[in-house]
Length: 430
Image (cartoon, rainbow, N blue to C red):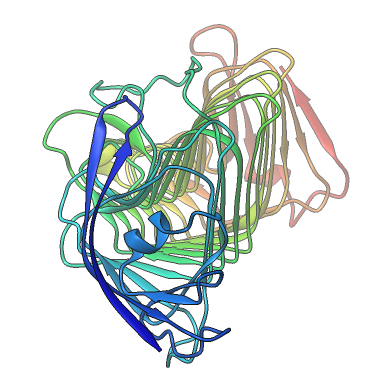
């Protein structure tokens, strides 16, 4: 066995062209045999048969761009700029825990463990790792943000920032906190492809910044999904994530602008809280954009002191297609409107509504769906859809409200229209 101690200072290029000094510190490297069985609480680089104590040193020593294997518990004290594609995989490697842990000791309102800083099309893959924030504030993953100093995010335009591929497979992300506008666990400006599978996001929080802001994603914020690009979230759990400020958009998940495809399937969203879309907020679905949601939503809350629109979902503008299915129970919009709150559905857009909706409460509007500006598209309510004991205080019995072209006009559908469940598809146009 060979032992060497090294002191390294890595200098990486940030997205704005300025150098980032990434202090790595003193790191022990140990040359091993042909397996990682003795690399406990370390990062194993297979080609060099080497175990690193320091994550940044292991990453910057990975000249062959091969998978790095994490074992035991690793602590990170400074942001790590990922300048090219990378694959980090948790491995037991003889350690006592099956899912290795990376703990952030960064204390900063905006910084993250990893800064995605590669070229357009770079791929970042994280698998079987438990990520946890320590005692202070930090994020897990971030990219550069186009308009981070602006009060309100741009949900209508497209940037020229690099588009990345991100895979989060069987990870845990918990207790991350930021005072940025959102994305306490993940912030990505432009998605080429995103896959979140078998993962858990728990107790992540966007803290009150002390000034008026519009931002999103108590846990995950993906700002742009251009045409041809995709986001898939499946078999995952989002629980107890929060957005603390007045215009918080989606405590678990937020997409600002999509003209590609997003699917959120077989997930559980429970006990999340935000102003607009207690669980999920999607601001703008363009004409080529499609969103499919089929998951379970329970005990999510659109808080009254934060705006209160959409105790489960919020779709601001829909010009493409949206399909909603799943089980929705015991969600509450304390002093606002609807389980699924919408501003406008444009001409040519389509909405499909299916699933089971039980005991969801709101102050006003349709208890299940509410479009309050103009509904100009087509809504299809699938056979088998069930709406039971959903209450709207100001509009008792109303489960769906669709605003007309003229101010004050609205078409409403009462719970009495659904006796147990629909027996055939129902199409609604205004």
